[in-house]
Amino acid sequence: MAEYFPGISKIKYEGPDSKNFFAFKHYDADKKIMGKTMKEWLKFSVAYWHTFRGTGSDPFGPGTIKRPWDDGSASVENANKRLDVAFEFITKLGAPYWCFHDRDIAPEGSSLIESHKILDAVVAHAKELQKATGVKLLWGTANLFSNPRFMNGASTNPDSHVFAYAAAQVKKAMECTLELGGEGYVFWGGREGYQSFLNTNMKRELDHFANFLRMAADYKKEIGFKGIMLIEPKPKEPTKHQYDFDAATVMGFLRTYGLEKEYQLNIEANHATLAGHAFEHDLEISSRYGMLGSIDANTGDPQLGWDTDQFNMDVKSATLAMAIVLNQGGIPVGLNFDAKVRRESTDIDDMFLAHIGGMDTFARGLVNASKMVEDGVLGGWIKNRYSSYDSGIGAKIEAGTTNFKELEKWVLEAGEPKQLSGQQEKYEMLLNEYT
Ligand code: XUL
Ligand code: CO
Image (tube, rainbow, N blue to C red; front, side, top):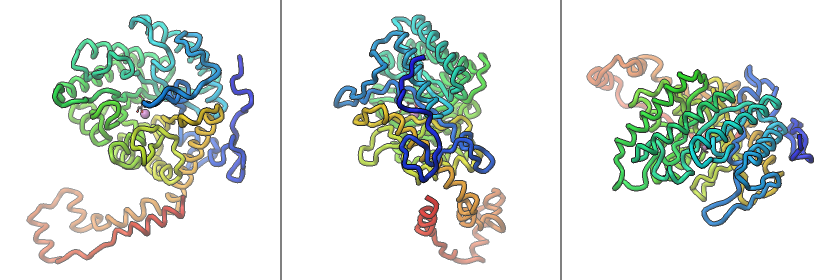
């Protein structure tokens, strides 16, 4: 088979003193941290759409990124060749997983049946490549937002014909994910939202959305797919309002429609920040309710404020994220780099450096978080802050075994509460010590 990156050999761990950009300084795949290898904790995945279909185009100009292997055609040969390149890239990087949308790996045909056939041919090739390289599928998904037929949404489209089309496309994408042994299947509601309240019946759209998700959950059982079904919250972009606004909204929606046992959440950092939260906010809320299934690791740019999908190189952010993952004993599906190199980062080397940097950042986050846990720092201070609920009246409040009358009586005896400092600066100083 042709080699597309002849100048780059397998990326190795060389340790923190290495000056080699094409080496890991922190990600040491087989190193054990708190009983599991780094590879098992982190479950890194490469996002096919960004790294192999991204061109660097933005609303102000066309693509800047040209790849020598891609002839730009919509042929199956070109699609298969891109996969060859991708698997060489992922293998050299040493990421154990990849992720895709149906329409990024295979071109869309002129009818649904033709699209299915093209997808089958490309999936067969991907299966051979997975077998040959050992790279596994983290999750699959369907692109229900690029084709103009989905301009008013997919399962929340006012036209039931489009709803049915989306169902047929997801059915096929789920079958392909099963065929490739995916560990998850993701629903990101690209245009599942609205642009104007004036033409939208929100309740009917939400009911339809829930029915769609119920059918998908039923189909999962029917075909014997054992992976985890995931919903990826995002508040807006491309629509003005997306129904899967943030983690808390999605959890409430799932409970309202009795779907909370069928789905978990795929939390994306840049989506959390678009919703006005920190990355760790959406991780924490979903984790504490047992709903954190997977992570789309990226970051936005605080000055731009839109979904820039950058590689996260911020060690502090990765430390806080990995502390949450450690606390829940691991990430059930994985950590996908839903991130792209900048429009100006046009070299092939940049593809590698972005991923190496991202992997090292999360590896450092993992090591830092594990040290904080081992030193009893993390968790310790928070536990202490709530200790008044561990006994006495606090324990009764927590257990739900008291009432307003009893609490009034208790306060009349106990008097005014003492002021307890939140000590935020102290904890910020402590976090600095570990990062
Ligand atoms: C878009 C986004 C998607 C999903 C998969 O903002 O994050 O790439 O991760 O559809
Ligand atoms: Co994403």
